[in-house]
Amino acid sequence: MKKALALVLALVFVLSMAAFAEADKTTVTIWHTFTKDQEAYLVKAAADFNALQDKYYVDVLSQAYSGFTDTVKTAVRSGNGPDIIFNYASEAAEYVDDGLVADLSQYIYADDEFAAAFDDCLPEGVMNGEVQGFADGLIHYLPAYTTGPILYYNKTLYDELGLTVPTTWEEMEANCAVIYEQKGIAGLGFDSLTDCLQAFIMEDENSTYINVEEKTVGFDTDSMKATVQWLVDCANKGYFKFKASGNYFSEDFNSGSVASYIGSCAGYPYITPDGFEFAMAPMPAQTWFPSWNRGPIVFYYKDDARAEGAYEFIKYFISAEVNLGWVKAVNALAPYSWTKELPEYQEYVSQDTAAIQALNAVGAHLDIAGSLPAVTGASTVRNEIKAAVENVAFNGMTVDEAWAACVANCNAALQGAK
Image 1: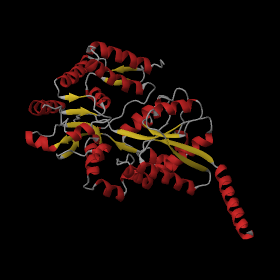
Image 2 (image 1 turned 60 degrees about the vertical axis):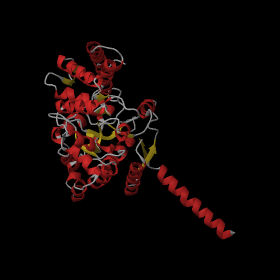
Image 3 (image 1 turned 180 degrees about the horizontal axis):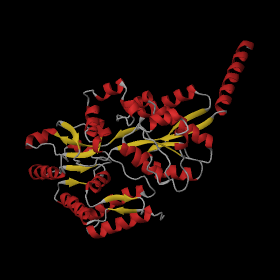
Image 4 (image 1 turned 180 degrees about the vertical axis):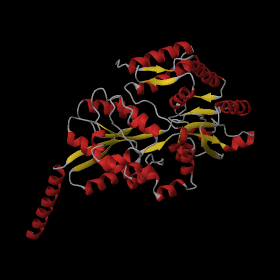
């Protein structure tokens, strides 16, 4: 009994000391909505980081997907939110004016060796347009992986009808007309109508997206209204579909009720076609492609130790080998040159698998990939351009009415109206 009691006391002592040691560290929390395998890698990365140093403890907490960004906003503004989430630069921009995101540039440029490597580590469009594109001139977000929209198409149907993969929107419309006339189904669905609209705006010679200095949008043009009318007309003819029967068009595609759709390259595992062969290709794009660069955003609670701890974890997480493991976990491309230079990364992107075929469809357009201003109101602009098309397609508004309301709401949001 004495020996057993001694062992229990010893165990209690060890656990107490471990808890004390952990409590003595600055805790950094990550909230996320990643899938099981992705979460497993993130948890491992946090555990490895925790074991490498004795100053910080990173805690990874899974959250509900539904309403996640709203939940984060409420928690951050109350002072009880996470230190890190993974999202886009446009989401970080929503917190800049209120001083709720940390300044990562102060840490990056305090380390001469890292700063020298950092300045040339990302594509120019990503560095200038996203990482260093915030209105206050500071860095509040860093990308961790690159994905983008691609075209999934029914290869069996395309072969039967003698169609070739479209590289322009004119070719896309022509294909969809043949498909609808011959098979009575929509030729194309849009998982993210918003991203396609942004691409249309950026490729329109008469339009710009956001004028940062004037805090206004630059797409109140006749040519963009004509594009919106064209989209709606194609939908009315049965060529295009804007709304899936479920959450994503993969379900409609699998059932054969739509012949192709534009969706994330990460969606390939959900393609289970019912009796036909599918293939993947780049979406139509000529001068601008909406690549998606998602990564950690760091919030600031007037606690410099937490902010610095969050930065130190991010610096570890985007290092070459760790970043390589992450892009594999999320089936993505690496944004950083130091990861791309690894032989293991070159081997990864040269595999002949469905996953890499999907990524190659993104990679085909990375030479024209661009980013959009990460300013206050940017997320509202995204929502409003989609709403405008849907108002014309489903709610009986004219293009002039819907686009005028869209422009007014966008400008109000960019100028700080609540």
